[in-house]
Length: 256
Image 1 (spheres, rainbow, N blue to C red):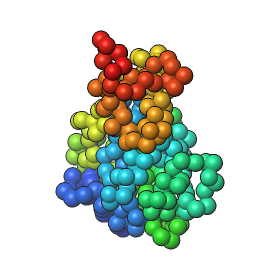
Image 2 (cartoon, rainbow, N blue to C red; image 1 turned 180 degrees about the vertical axis):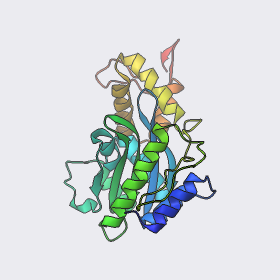
Image 3 (cartoon, rainbow, N blue to C red; image 1 turned 90 degrees about the horizontal axis):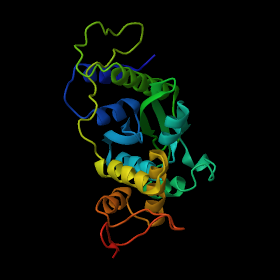
Image 4 (spheres, helix red, strand yellow; image 1 turned 60 degrees about the vertical axis):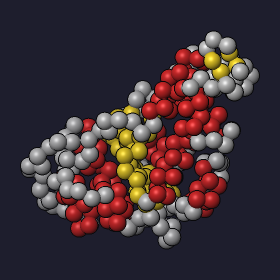
């Protein structure tokens, strides 16, 4: 059974009431942070829709850049990934993310996939507090929220009227009004760069994104910054041993 706090959050979302949904969800879940990302584009890139507080946004960007962590793993497996104490996670599981998360001050993370069966539409990431645990109530509330969001996105009910969605038998009202698919992408340059790399290397979109992530990590630069260089043709991925040619580049003169 969901808590009264989560029931109220879902009711507010269903009615389209104002406010910060990420903040409201974090408060209802008694969590250190909440982030909601949707999977869009041919490369199924995670586009952030809600984040609170700023630490959640930074951690979501870290997961996106590295392609590892509870969020990406939840998307791959289709099952919740619960790691409320990152200190207990084997280093080889997320070798790059764990030390970076520790430096950020992130103590625990749980990922809840949005989807049914093989269909994935997004992921809900919950940052755990200093207790380094997740209670049964928090788990019930988070899974209810993920299920409600999944239904809203898959049913395309972003503009529903909310009729017939009562709060009976301890279940939450379906959030017909939340939220619409984003009309614009937060990371358009990453999508564009991934497509360009796919063409340059003759590889699938998924592999092109991995190459882009690897270069960003290896050069210790933000993924968006590297993607911008690709789009501006200052960086081209080629057939060299290093898989890329860095430095200024133009289609006419080659590497500058």
